[in-house]
Length: 379
Image (tube, rainbow, N blue to C red):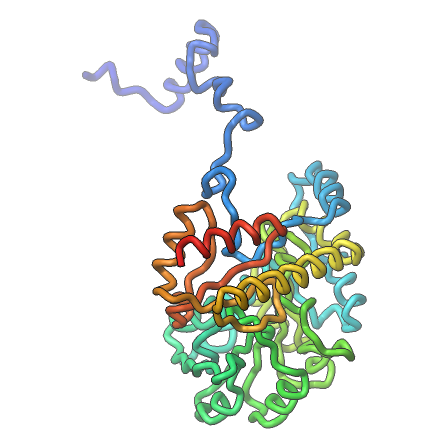
C-alpha cells in the first residue's frame, strides 16, 4: 500500500504525463456530446405544449422588438458586470427626480424583499391588506416582524380607514399595492394622498405600482408624486408587466435619498441586473407604441370577458389591470385544476383568501376565447 501514497505534485506530474500519452477524446467529460449542445437542447418551460398561460399577468406580446435587438447586442458584454448608472440616469429623467432617489434591481421583487430587512428588522410592525400581493408581508414574517392584515372592503378596494385604525406605536411600515393584485381595483390619488398625510411621520408607506401604466389618474399623478411632495413613501415599479420583461428581471424603487440609502445597504448593488435586460430596459422606456399596443389588448380583453361573464351570469370584479377576478360556482382550486386539465392555466382565489374566485390574465383574443370555452365546460 505504501507505493500508493504519492504527493500532490507527483500526482499532477503523472496526470500531465498521462495526458501526453492518451488522447483527450478517450475521456467522456472532455467534450460535450452532440445531444447535450445548448443549441439543440429542448427547453422545458414548465407547461405542456400549447398551454394557455393566463395565470401570471404576463404580457403576451413579450418585449418590444427594439428591446430584443438591444438585448441581443448586449450579450457580447455578458462577461462584464453591469453598472446601472445610465439606466438610473434615464429613469431619473423619465420621472423628473434626482439620481439619488432611484435604485434599480432584480425586478421590483428585490425591493419587496429587502424593505422589511431595512425597516422592520428590529421588531417593527407592518400593516397591509389581507387580499394583496404577498411577497413583502411574507418576507416581513420571515424576519419576525408582526404583520397586521386588513381585509379589503365590500367593494374590493383597499380599506385605508381600517388600516389606519390598526396602527400601533410599533407600526413602522404600511404596504399598499395600487392597483391592487389580485382584485385589479385602484384607489384614487387623493385617497392615497390623504391617507399618507394623516399618518405619523415615523411610518413609511411602501406603494407597489407594478401596474402603474394602468393607473387612471387624468393628471398622471401616482405614488411618485407623493415622493416629490416630501411624503415618507417608497414606490416600486417593474419592467415585468407593460414592458414584457418578466423573465428578464428588472425593476426599481423611488424614494427620498435617505430611504434609498437604507435600501441600497441590503440590495445587490447592480449585481442583480444582467447586461441584456439593462440594455432592453433602456430601449423599452422609449417604445411608447409597444406599451399602447399592450394597453389596447388589455382593454379589448376586459370587454370580452365582461360580456362573456355577463352572459354566463357570473359575478366579477371590474378591473383597471391586465387581469380580473371572476366568481365561480365551485371551489376555485377545483376549477383551477379542471381548467389545467384542458391546458388552460389561471390562478385560484384561495391564494388570497378568496376561495370562490379565479384570477384570469388578459391574453390574445384566441387565448381568451379558449379560456371562456373551457370555463363554460367545467361549470
